[in-house]
Image (cartoon, rainbow, N blue to C red; front, top):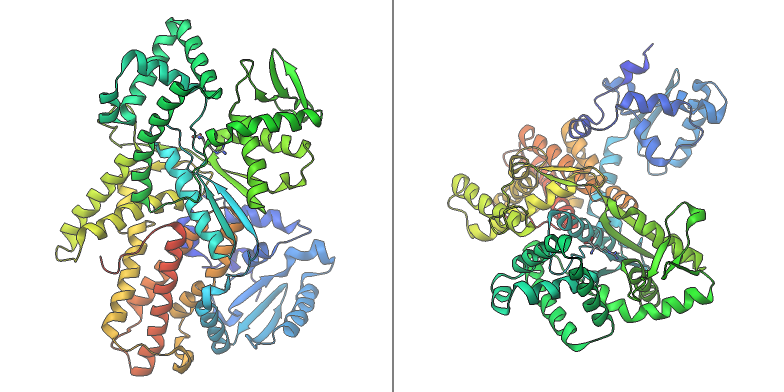
Amino acid sequence: KDLTIKEWKTNKGIVEEEIDKEEIDKEEIDKEEIDKERFTKDQIKNLLEVPSNQIYGDYSLPCFYFTKIFKMAPKLIAEVIKEKIKMMDTEGILKNLEVVNGFLNLYLNKENHIKKLLFEGRKEDFGCGKAGLAQTVCIDYSSPNIAKNFHVGHLRTTLIGNSLYHIYKKLGYQVIRINHLGDWGTQFGKLIVAYQKWSNKEAVEEKGIEELLRIYIKFSKESEQNLELEEEARSWFVKMEQGEKEALTIWKWFKEISMIEFERIYDLLGVSFDYYTGESFYMDKVPDLVRELMEKHLLSESEGAKIVDLNQFDMPPCMIIKKDGSSIYHSRDLAAVLYRKKQYQFDKCIYVTGQEQKLHFEQVFKVIELMGYEWSQNLIHVPYGLVRLQGVKLSSRTGNIVYAEDILTEAIKRALELIHQKNPNLDQPKEVARKIGIGAIIFHDLFHQRMKDVDFSWEDVLSFEGTTGPYVQYTYARAKSILKKAENKPKIDEVDVSLLSDVTTYSLLKIISEYKESIYEAANRFEPSVIARYTILLSTAFNKFYHECNILNADENLRDARLIVVDLTQEITKDAMGLLGIECPEEM
Ligand code: ARG
């Protein structure tokens, strides 16, 4: 019984560690925590160990971590906690508690615990539909720029935002999905000039965004030599701001052309929005903003422009009106958030963009705070890292740009090839290929923690093994096919749960019971990767169960009990994948 901390290190979270190789070394966190004065629930959960030898219990809590809080010897601490836990355990989940040196060893009453685990797994909506009751969240995501290509960065905001929408919806929030299209700004002045000089109606109609992009790039090059072009562009934008008809007609047409392409991508991804209120929508709301800022003595002049000085907060000034009198990204965002607060009375407003916009949002939120709105606390920027495309063929359209749409269609094509190889008799192969291909891209993107950069490679995306979407989908299809073969569907109250106490099944049940918690964690951290990782843990545990535990050929009682586990797994897998915005084919 004289074990060192090291020896107590266990197989806990082997799977977690496997998928988390990049994470900080566990030893290091532990050392840090010994000095702690406070622990969150999650941290305590992390401290719980699973002894490799069951004679030390199902869990063990090393109490020397708490010496700083209790100012007592670990052994005494363990005694105190033991008594507390005993009193709390009204459901009889624990069979026994034992103090050994500084450790509190917990022995579960497996039958009661399994019942509880199963119960958690089959609650309606997994027990999380009420958290957000009567609360509203706005999510501003995707928001591509008109007349520019929808690139992989926009793919990330689209997927993260869409997943956050599903997660918050699951928690019972009213969610408002806003596509803050980049459809206003000086670039449209440039585009109009470029169009008049180097393009025509037919070309734009035929080639769409590709043509708009071509002339935009040409404009940038030409204007380096010819400064007059910039002037001309600026005056076209001013005309747009003043509502001049010709300018607006061309702009509107560019927008329509772009929207056709964006909608194609949204259709492929299964993403939709409640509002497409882009930047142009707020243009006429900027004068009110200016008035309010002036009344609150926040506006000052700088070289002809109107700004809010943020010097004392170590930030550059927030530009409100440019010296030519036009609005700017910042002022349109400020007008937008005031409008949203009034219109939707949100409790939270979330913005999903690349991390390079961090300063922009800090400035915008600061100005709202200075205007005296305490709800500035509820404005949240959710940034994300870069996508690095290695080995991805550049578009044949423009030669040097990767279009998100090309990646999506390529994924579907590759998935179809895989189906032809692996299961040529599959029903509706095209539909399944779409679900697999798109699912693979979404999963790959969301599996990475938001702030980490993503290296994209086809091998990682479409593999049927490892931490991929197809792997989880395949697991789901496997569970479905077992249930189909079983024909009868046992009732959960009628099975003998004590038959599920072997280590493999029990670990699977534990993961099943943790679904709800992972939804909360994903929501609190604005981190869909929590759900993606959960689906991998669940799939891995299920496949182990599938290989080790005979299901269909087991004795009737055992078979029925195991079928309940299969059923719960498929239900949760489908639901969790739905939270990521991924569909699971019934067969693949
Ligand atoms: N259009 C911007 C871009 O493509 C993103 C807009 C994000 N939303 C916002 N409210 N500023 O980078």
